[in-house]
Length: 451
Image 1 (cartoon, rainbow, N blue to C red):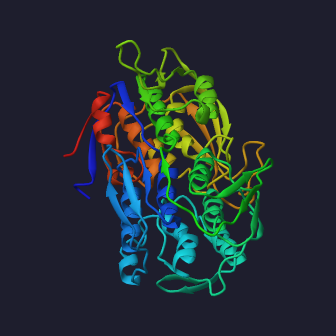
Image 2: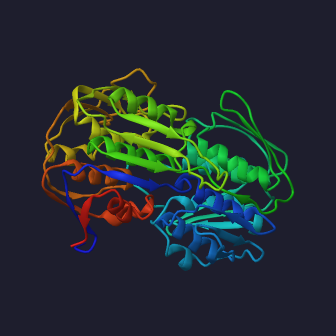
Image 3: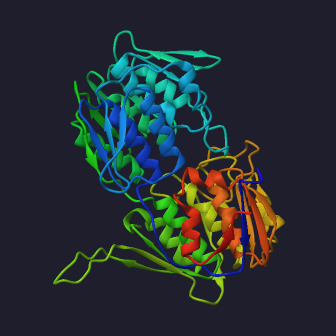
C-alpha cells in the first residue's frame, strides 16, 4: 500500500492540454467482438489501461493472437486458432474486471462452451449478472453455476429470441448483441441501452457483417448471420474521461483543453457544466491546408472566475446525465454557492465517496429519499442514493483511500483543489480507466508525486 499512493500538493489550478483516446466502455467490448470474426481485426486509439490488459490476456488464453500495430494505440487480433482455456488460467483474471461475462456468447459460438470466473469491477452496488444469464438462457444456453464460476454450454446451438430487459442495462445489451449476431434467426431486444458506446459497438459488428436495426423506443433487431469477418475501427473518444478533466478544471479554477472530446456525446454534461457556471469552447478538427499544420478537435473547459452556481441533477441512462459524470462533478459542486441536489438512479451505492469529501471540509448530506422526479428503482429500499451539497466549502488536505474507479478520480480532484498536501492511497485503481493519468497531471501543472 505504501507504493500505491500519490502525494498531492493542492491549491494550484490545472492549466494545459491533454488528449483522450478510445472510450474504455467501447474498446474492451470491441476487443471481445474480435472473437466472432474469421479474419483479423484492427482497433485504433486503444488506451493503455488495466481493463485492456485484462481483456488482452483473456483473448490470448483463448488462442486469439493479439499484437501491437504500426500506429501507437493500434491492436491487431487474429482469431484463427480460438481454443478452450483451462479454469486455472482463466481464474488468474478472476475479480479483476467485469468484462469476462461478455465472452459467453462469442465463446459459445466458436467453441460450444464457455467458463466465466468470478467477476470484479468497482464496488458501487451489487450489479448482478442475472440479466446476462437470463438472456443467454433465452438464446438456448445452459448455465451451470459452480463454486469456481459459471460453466456454459449450447448443445443445440444458439437461436434468436424476443427479449425485454427489466432495465436498460448497458452490459446486458452488449451481451445480447454479441450473442445474437450469429444466433440462428431474428432477435428482438426491447428496453435496450442506447448509449453512444452501444451504438459504436453496433458499428463494429455491422462492419463485421452483422445485420442490426436500431428502432425507436429502445428496440434493437438483430438478424443472425452464419459467419462474421474482421473489422477495422477507430472508437469514439472516452466521454467519461473528458468530463472528469472538465470537472477538475472547474474545481481547481483552471483551464484544460481536452483533445479528442466530442460535443455530440457530451451534450447533457455540457448543459450542466454551463449551468454551474463553467465555460467551454468546442474546437473543431482542422485538416492541414496550404502547408499549414492541422489541428485536432476537442473541447476547452475553464472556470471563468466568480462564484459557481448550485444545480439539481439526476443521473439516468442515456441520453440522461451519465452516472460516471456525477462523482467528479460533485467535487466542483462543493465550491458552488447554495444547495445542489444529486439524485443517483443508476447505482444504489454510488455516494459512499462523499464521506471522504466531508472529511476534507465539504458539507454533503446523503438521503434514502428520491430527491428528484426521475423514476428510480431505489426508493423505499433503504439505499442512500440522493445527496445535498451545501457550498461553497473550503477544502483542506486529508489522507484518502480510493474505493472505486470514478470515486478515485473525484478524490484526486478534491486533493488537487484542497489547501495543503494530501496522500491518496489506492491510486493504481485509477489506471483501470484513465490512461497515464499521472503524466497528464504533470502536463497540467499539478504538483503530485509518488513518495
